Image 1 (cartoon, helix red, strand yellow):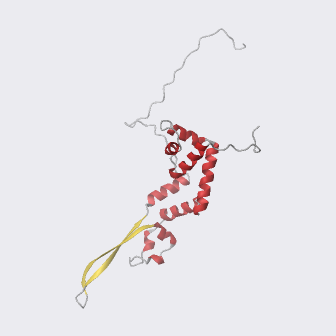
Image 2 (cartoon, rainbow, N blue to C red; image 1 turned 90 degrees about the vertical axis):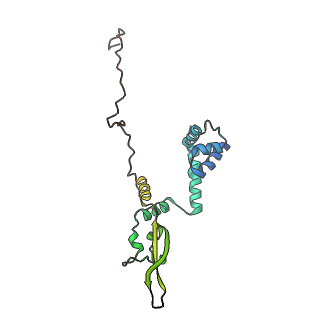
Image 3 (cartoon, rainbow, N blue to C red; image 1 turned 180 degrees about the vertical axis):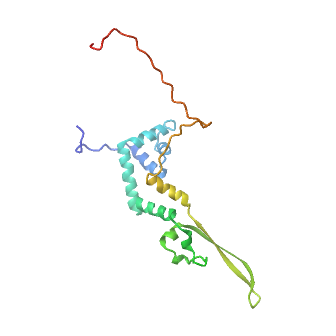
Length: 192
């Protein structure tokens, strides 16, 4: 009889190696190859291993351990995605259009900034000593907001995958043909 008193099945050495390799890039086919499975069967073997309950438990445990070790949880990643997805570039500038000093930016705005480039160029003005004035142009680049919003929406289940039922010419794809066969009377009655 199965139950909680039964010992969990241990992974084979190859399965354990698959788990280690899978955590590198989350690619089941490549993990299967690196774990020593045949290249010919690596795709199907990788899929089969991912469906194995013991392998799933080992992957989940390893991911949890790694997450604890580096101090990053799913909520942390989601929080950063929200910072990027809901960012407002206007918060990086003062009312007169000057870039705020970076130490004055709130955490959400600072997290959304990918890079800041400062370009100096002559302004055309000359001071009383005959020196040409320089103006500073700040180019602020944000992380990809659309990508962040898409990831948030997927996480929240807002995207539903749909199957296309139209052909390239715009018409509906025909339903599969249905064959109806009439079975010959075998001489039985309903009472039989």
